[in-house]
Each structure stands twice: as C-alpha cells, then as structure tokens.
Image (cartoon, rainbow, N blue to C red; front, side):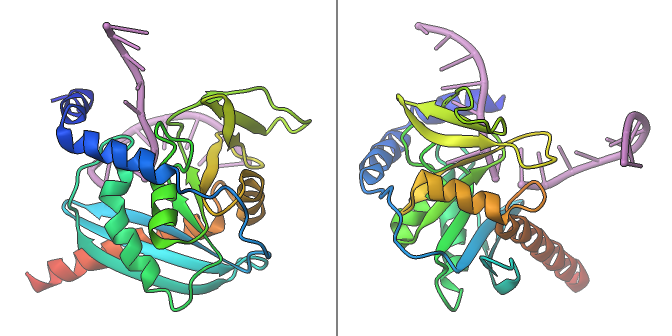
Length: 232
DNA sequence: GCGACAG
DNA sequence: ATCTTGTCGC
C-alpha cells in the first residue's frame, strides 16, 4: 500500500483529529521570545530506528567551543508509526527519556525536525519545548510547509519561509553546502536567535549538536544489534 | 478540490 | 528514518 494512501486513511481517523486539535491548542502556548542571557550549553537530540526499537541520543556541547559536555542515551520500543505532521507522537517518548538523563538541563535544545514551520504551527520541536518546558529550535533537512520568499538582505544563503502570512522560518544554505537546512522556533526563543545559534554551531552541513546526536544514536543502534547477535 | 508531506 | 550498488569527484 502506497505511503500516501496510508496517510490518507490515517488522516481520517478520529485519533488524528484529536491530535490535531491538541497541536493547535498547545501551539498557543509556544513562546517566541528569548529567555534572556546567552546560551552556554546547547544540546541536540536525534533518533535512530531498527524495526520496533528506537535509539535516542542527546548530546550537550559548549556553545562557544562546541566541545562535548555530556551525552545521554535511551532505548525504547516504537509505539506509533511515522505520519507526516505527527512526528512528535512517534519520537517524543524517546526524546524525553534521553533529555531527562542529562545531568543538567541545556540552555537550548536543537531538535531534528520542524518547529513552527508546521501546518498546525506545532512541529516536534515545539512539542518537545512545551512539554519539557525548555527553549528549543527546530532544524530539518527537508521542507514540510511554507513558501520560500526572496532573500531580504544581501545574504543569498538565507531564504525566509512564509506560512500563514508571516515569516515562520528560514531555509539556510550552510557555507559550502549544496542544500539548505530549515530553521524555525521550537519554544522560548526568537527566530533571529534560533537562526543565529544554528549558524554559529554549524561546521559542516548540520549543527554540531545534531550531527553528534545523529552519530551517537546510530552508533548505539549498531552496538545493540551486535550484542543481540552475540547472544544468539 | 487535489496533491504533497519533517523523521 | 532505513535499505542498498555502483558511481562521481576531491
């Protein structure tokens, strides 16, 4: 069955109607203002999958040197399928577990996925930010919603993305990169600060906290698979 | 109304 | 996201 057909069926379910209403409600609780004070510790969280198991890694780095400060991980069972615009329903449990294991809350958390650049203005980054009450930034590799505008300043690498009449995010092409990454507000941060922090922590194509979390989650998956194989 | 759709 | 060979380019 084609994925889009599956989505069509799921979209008609009462459960998703309820989840959509919940998203719209929680979206009204998102704060688009900076908490105040420069971020000293920035963390990134990402998830890797192996069938019905999910491996989540949260990596905290020093905002200036980008040196790793702490790594926390969590493994759990997948409890919801991937359905576009409902990503949080699938990833939140693992993300919460990993982030709570950090000995100290990061000043800002980068989440792999969109924030306000979402149909209900409540992507996974907003979901994580509101539920855990921490500043978050949404960073995605592919677009989901919104329309690309013309670069405003002289910066051709930063394209504003409009959604519902407002600039809700940016498509930014990192130096040397061929494709852009999409940045939007998650919670308790301004769009300007979100973009600034992403720029300042990006070395290659993705912000260091997320690049490290991606590597750590995949590494954890490999190790667990090797252990399983060894027990057989 | 139709199509597209983060990870 | 994950699967997965060959192939292009530094």
